[in-house]
Image (tube, rainbow, N blue to C red):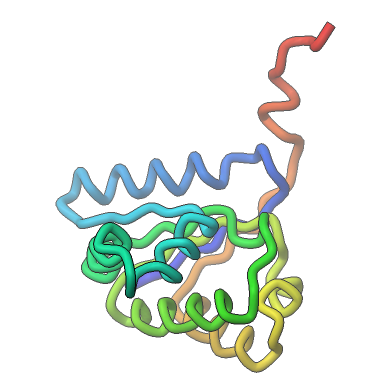
Length: 148
């Protein structure tokens, strides 16, 4: 199991790289799950009452690679941070994880709302992990048509 974290501002290709790696893993026969952090939070919170969410969680937990996109774009509650920790703990040593975020690792404490929880989450994620801190200009902004 090996993890990847892509950190950078929007528009530099974090999601594109993650999906490309996921697609390649599927071609190689691995089971891959992809979720935005927002949809993942919904699934985690509703898995006990929704058959659809329970099925999604079962697929995630049985995947070889789990891609979590957009960590940090939307604020999360204390309950959601605890659910995220439980998921990361369940995946640790069981699956590879790719996380994309516009927040640096130092900002994750604010995101998760608890220094101790953040330390444990980062300890599990960064164990056997490659961190990519990407810089540059937004591809979308650089290549957009003029608004006028």
